[in-house]
Image (cartoon, one colour):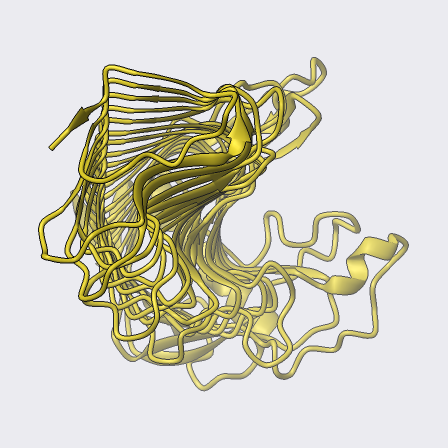
Length: 588
């Protein structure tokens, strides 16, 4: 491979930061000559180079075929003290280095500086949208193939430090769609772009690795102000530009104004091993993995992992969120859309009004084996959602509740370990199955609420829960005719409260197979009590006191009607209504 050191004097290139037009023309002529001569690698010496980044022959796309235009089969080695400044201008778009419809290109080292703080924002041409001036780029990869951008320091562009986009449009018959393919951006320093530090709109097989990506959108930036924005263009369920197979790994994100990374509409995206002080979002993305990232803040603001919903034309997102560590944010993981797995994440130190693990308007989501500690807000929340599972999570230290289920259908909370929280599970206007949960509120520092509660708008199936030493009601609920209540095979031990299981209202609730022991320091209490219910089945429960203090009654249904009290093992006298059916109860 032939290698050549650029002769700046030969081509009239000014290295003192003057004569943008002459310098840019000189660079382009030098690259053309080198390419024609078979030179594949060019060393660019130290210098301060002023670049004319505006294609004045294109009124609609001044950022295309502009600036220094890199040919195919070319590596540019920029000296560490080679600085390329974009000449201040009033154009809504510009490019410093243009890599367009070529292949086998590398840019290594050096510095690129946009002119956002010297830019004239008054000119915008004929289109109203151009007022934003958000198309000024440090490097523009436009429909190119096999591109490496390594170790380049880029800052202060009016648009993006690096743009990866397609030539032409997909699903439009009169154009040829050429996405940028096999693009690698590594070990770069990308700072302070006015819009995004990196945008990927029409790229396939894009690798973004080991970069430091900071301060996108600072100082009155232009939305979206993301460290990396993966965002194709489409209308409804028709894509005109697609980001596909984008891997974002081992990067450091700090100070980006709105989000570190947003996969707004990309496909097959991996976001792994990064350090972030702001949100990472899968947006409307499809087939996305967010794994093993470290999220750290000190001010308890923002949500670490966020989302928007399902992309038009798709039934789900197919998202995996696993192995992330989140500390010091307002909230942890907020899931929207459908078909999402959230597992093995560790979350701590959130704000008092935040939520660690949440869904909103989501479907088919499973949260499993996550660890949540020292989060005083809600630990899990399913709101306006369907087919949600919380399974095997360690949920600790909430001043509100460990699990909230509201306005949702078919929510399952199974085998969760809940400790040191004010309340265990709250179900409101929902259908929920609560199975095999350990709910230990004994070490909570203040007055505790209920281990499990539900309202009259809910259907609940509560089974195999273990609730030790409840100081307040272990299971309390209100029901109504047409609602289903099943409270079966729960183990409530050493109760300090007056009523471990209390159901108010409704028809035909079932309370069976529960094992309730009291360990009070005074007489009184009812093991199971119903009020204003009709047709309750109270069957095969065990209720007794392990202390010397007697209960008022192990089972009280006197304020209900038509209860069936059958086969219970009890200490003390039943308190029944005259309409009740009672048989085969065994004193112990």
